[in-house]
Image (cartoon, rainbow, N blue to C red):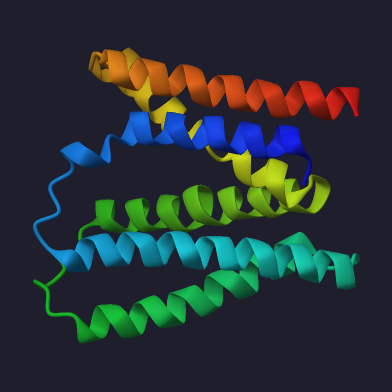
Length: 174
C-alpha cells in the first residue's frame, strides 16, 4: 500500500470511532463484544480468501461462490441455533417473507455485490469503501427516523467521507 492509503485508512478509523462512539456502548457482557469482534474478523478473513481465490482462479462464478458461502453459513448457523436455548418460533406468513427477504435480497444479493467489488478493486479500497455503511445508517436514521446525529457523529461522518474521497481521487489520478 502507498502512504496516502495509510493516511486515508487512519482518517477513516478516526471517523468510524467517532460515529460508533465505543465509549458510550453498554457492554454488559463480554460475550457480545467478543462476538462482534469475531464477526468482523471472520468477514475480513472471508474477504482475504475471496480475493486470493480470484487471483488464483479468475474464472470463478460469483453466483456459485455466493451460493456455497451461504450454504456453509446456513449449516453453521443452524447448528448454533439448535444449540442455543431460545423461545419457540411462531410460524406466521410474515416470518417466511422476512426470512426470504433476509436470505435472498439482503444477504445473497449484497454478498454477491460485495464479491463483485472485491474482484474488481484492490482489497484496501474495497474494504475502505465499506465504511460508507455506518455513514448511510446514520444519515438514513436522520432522514427517516428524525434522529439527529450529534456533533461527534457529524465529525466522524465528515472524516469517513474525506477518507473515501482521498481514496477515490488518488485512484483516479493513479
